Length: 191
Image 1 (cartoon, rainbow, N blue to C red):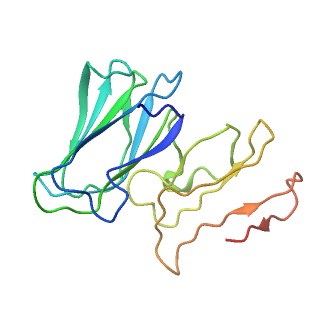
Image 2 (cartoon, rainbow, N blue to C red):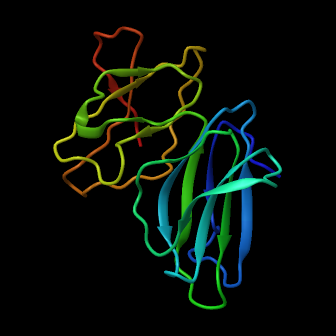
């Protein structure tokens, strides 16, 4: 079955290493989407023997497709792969020996709000869902990014970290729960 939520995660496996002789695929077909953005969060597969293919599909059946990217080896996070049709497929093929940690990615129907160079301080996110990113690849030195999350529906804000890595003891991410009064001091949320 196709993934139909507006945002989600795709991985090669649930364990520490993927299986040998694997050939799997998942179709991403979010309801009503005109585009799909795929953000690779981690990719470590046997170079030139195991492959992840990202396809732009003509429809949810993906009988017609164009290969957007063929990935093998170690690939750091970077710019998103974009399907302008609203349909995407991720295929994974491994050979008979040697396996690594595999592949992980996040998909969404909207581009992530990012903070390259620390320029997004004070951005207010009002959608029912979304992605926040520090930009392509490694985050910039001396970056200071701030996003205020205030769903326009008035519901709770739920924050889930799909991928998170900073320099220990030097770089930090802080999540705070704020009151309705913008001049009030935010209260830290316990971990």
